[in-house]
Image (tube, rainbow, N blue to C red; front, top):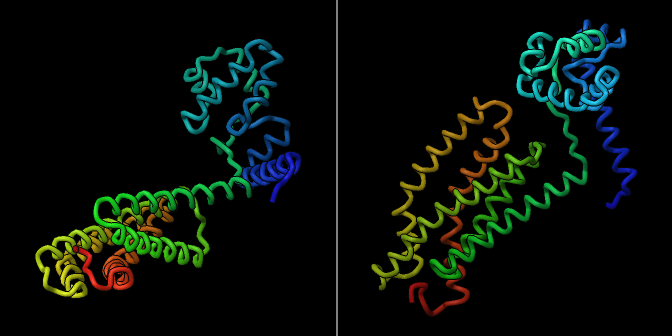
Length: 293
């Protein structure tokens, strides 16, 4: 859906209004009383509006002073005292007097306001999809060179399964897909591939050692030989991400939730899917020859 520049500006303005309403709802009663008197909140005021206040007294330096004050506010988080501001921002008493007469120190500070509209959301989904696809293609090429093309196909199909299952469960829980989730998806791809590669390395070794055995039996033997390592490694990783999910706080919650799903799906897919896919590839395209021949 294409929108004109005007409609996008209107949409951003609407989001700005919503953001301001949220800020107003969080204000204390004394802050609202100060606003009704016509004073400006120094902890939420923007650089342009602050410069307009200072222009009446300092027309040439207003913009630089405003920028200096806001930089101090960002570094400290919130301005609690005018004397402290004077010391930290390095401004004179005349500026402080002007601020004291036209502003007040509110109980909350706005460090930044960000608007994520439909276009940004679309770009985020597009870039996330591209990141996963290119990661899968890169791994297919690497495994094809390091092992054989059939191994690469089996590994990529296994990874695609892990990503799709994770996205499906994530969608069912109505969670937001953000940058930490994308990072978790790529981590899942790498983690699941690691388990699969361990099994494939053992398959390749057993093809040399057990030349007289059927390919199906070699796959089964390879899985059994690596099963303990796969389960123990996945169990320790699962406990770690579970701890992050339970005690890591809201910021990392989506990342940990995605990793929990990915570790579980990656473990069982490496055991139950990678080798069967390799077997059916061998059966379909090389019915008379083993993978090691």
